[in-house]
Length: 427
Image (cartoon, rainbow, N blue to C red; front, side, top):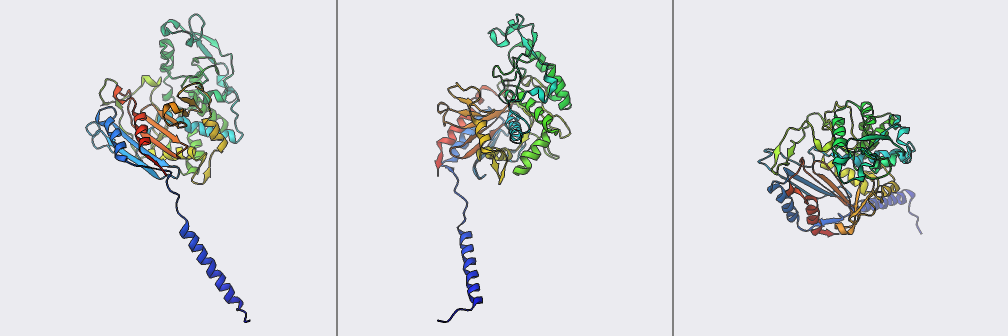
């Protein structure tokens, strides 16, 4: 039997390998989207109805699957109120409390690195908080122990007798608050501080060290400025600004463009609109009573980075950040947080007896009573809202910019989500 020359054998082997490689490449296709929507026009109609009714100045919504493919997108604007204004995925939005989960994620990354522990005392990193005072009523009782807010004044101060931990900051159990408790003499002190106008983090720490806490640390949940203090802890731990930490640990390695502190050069923010008197109007706002402080500074030269309320984002960029959470800590091939950390962030920590769901680390996890069970959601002051559906593997964001929305705006987020889930086709 004649033997084939070696170079022929080698040539045939290389040809077969090349054909196999090409065949494999042709077979590689992107996975199908997890969901599709049967009738997007029906969802558009729900969004349009809120703008047409004068409830909000505009609405923009975007839904992405876990791979970043757009499942739904719609923009609707009140052109009489905002002539010439276009809102899309790249429009800069004041996201307010949607900053909180970014700051918490940075802190959890530091926990994974062994730089900080959740049970560490806050005073370990901010010794200026070692002698904080707690406000009590005129008879010495806890401020939450009376139904008559006016009867607690004048206030008295007592030393904090419990240790404030880093986890208390994450879970809003530290005693820090916004100036909207309904207790006039307490709220006046908080609002007079004008925390957001302070020049830098060191001056903010000094100012907050002089403010009374609403309660003894660790004793009860009260939503407030705890996440801003958490950002200060992260800065003290690392010696870097929160702006730098977000850039170095989140946006740059994950490839997210459009989530940041400070407005980029040449960019503009949307007008502020108020609906407090029942009708919408563009307003100039120098101070907001609802925040207990002046507005955050969005000038890139402003050196105070509020971890609880100070960030800007485009919807496209924020959806990318949400997809990192949905993908259990990973985005664009980079692992930011471990899967176990994400599980801890959505596990029950506060409001655990609430029939509508529970709080994770500033992430609300819905029960079946609230519609689809197990949704992770949150929002911000001027009408921003997000949710993550870990079962169907998509994220949703719906935003507007409005101060004191009229009554006609109530139920907007629930109505939008209901419209979406009514049209879902699971693949």
